[in-house]
Image (cartoon, rainbow, N blue to C red; front, top):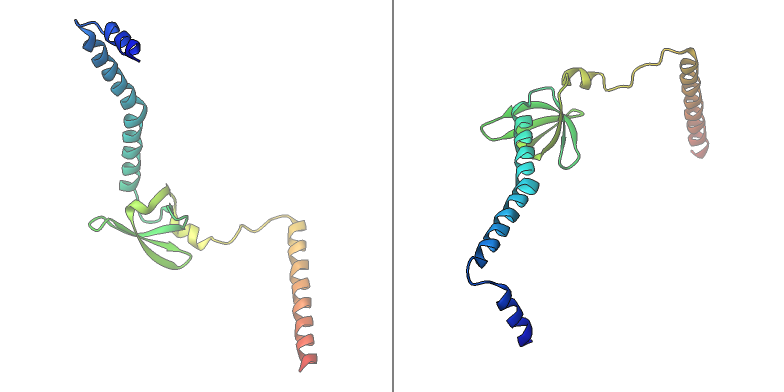
Length: 147
């Protein structure tokens, strides 16, 4: 054990041995800065810019996975009211994960899927409607028999 300690003591020269250690520490700090801190700052600035450009009608997703449309923004309290299928909820601005700019009013009104223009789809939907009407008639007939 003493031979190992003596080896390390002999390896460190008394003149300038600490300078190499300081250079290594500086290099380590620089590498850590460029690999971790700088990208995090860029991401934070991008997120802050996204939140400042938020406006009424933008589609958003919260950190909890709730999808909605921005109704009002209160910059003083740093809150946003979102409309999620007619339900108005208030969240902190920090709870917004993703923003998709868009015409929110049109998106809410056009929540139904677009109508198909082909004849095959129209005939299929007519057949589905007839089948569902037949099944509802059977259910009422069954309930009448049970009474």
